[in-house]
Image (cartoon, rainbow, N blue to C red; front, side, top):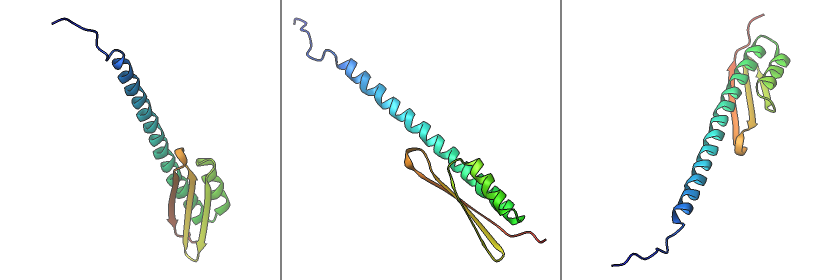
Length: 109
């Protein structure tokens, strides 16, 4: 038998290009996922801080603090009787909706 050149020349290059592209997409998605988790944690921290300040009677300061903790977030503080509810929400990476809620009871004066 005589060796003949294969028609598969260049296949390794194509397979490597596809593999590298898939790896880059996986890394990009992973980085965006980590960013989303971090932003979700910031939303939770901001909601908790705003609820704590609102319970002390400093609602405006709580809203400002939440806005500083999570830039570009929407902060909604709802006070009904002896219940305070704070919702912090924003759009995360890839347009994912991120939201966190915290509750508190007003402190006696």
